[in-house]
Image: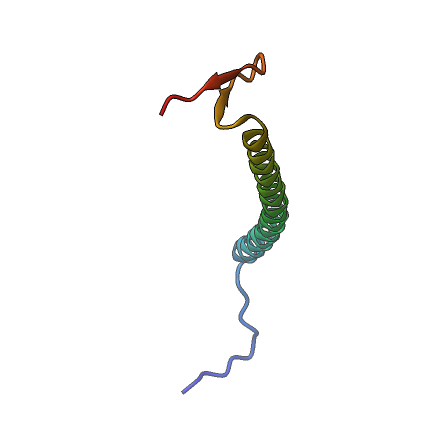
Amino acid sequence: MSIIQDKPVKITDEELQELKQLQQNKQDLIFALGELEYEKLRLDTQKQILEAQFSKVAQMEFELSQRISEKYGDNKIDLKTGNLESIIA
C-alpha cells in the first residue's frame, strides 16, 4: 500500500548532480565506442585493400618467376647482381 504525500519527494541537489554526471559519462562512453567501431570498420576496409594488393603482387611475382624459369631454367638468382647460379639437386 502506498502512502500519499502532500509534498513531492525530491532527491538532494548532490544526488541530482551525481546522476546527471553519470548519465553524461555514459553518453561520452557510448560516443567513444561508436568512434572506435567506425575506426575499426575503416581499418578492416584498409586491411582488405592491402590484402588484395598483396595477392596481386604475389601473383605477379609468381608469373615472373615462371617466365624466368622457362627462359633460363631452374636457377637461383642473385638479386643484387642478376647473376644466375645453378641449383644442384
